[in-house]
Amino acid sequence: MINLLPILDQKTIKNIYHYRLLEWYSLLLACLLVILLVLAGSLYFIITLRVDTEQSILDSLQIKNSDGSTAARLSVADINKAITLMVQSTESPRLADLINTLAVGTPVGIKITNLKFTRTDKGEVAVDLKGVTANRQILLGFTSLLEGLGGFHEVNSPYSNLVKKTNAEFNISLTVAKVKTK
Picture 1 (cartoon, rainbow, N blue to C red):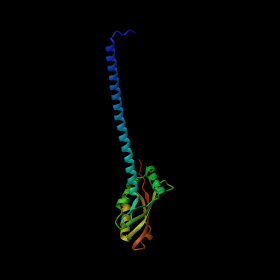
Picture 2: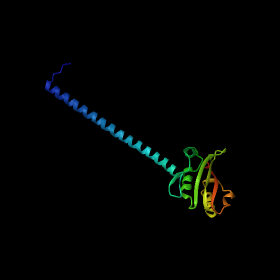
Picture 3: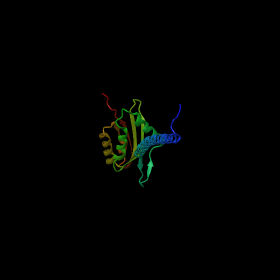
Picture 4: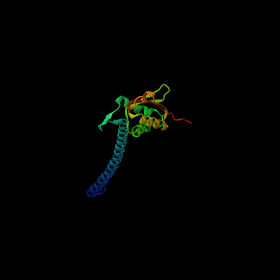
């Protein structure tokens, strides 16, 4: 192939070609940076959402001591078991909501000291709730509150919980109600 352009025109065309090539590469790099920023923002959102969710679960599984400090009420293994039960238990009506109700709706005068989740032979989720009550009336009201929630199939509070009038330790067994499928 014979090039009939003068050398000056050849250099000008070559410079224009390199300039346009540089423009295209810059545009491609800018698009890649925008895509990378969108992906990084999405990843950050997902990570913070997961951390916030895990933190809210941990907060709902903690109690306040009498001096105002927070003490974990369950071991790490118990927390993991509770989280696993929440995730695996599709037949349970929002187990996380029931835990939140227990954490937030516990009346003044009731201190929950232990919360244990187990799966029964029938595949139901059983909750053992232990604590201390200021007096019998508050405990009876708390038991009525649990029965009225509708999320529990059974609420068992033995009579031994009512023997002592004040500062009595109590133990309540709950069975989470299954959602009826059509």
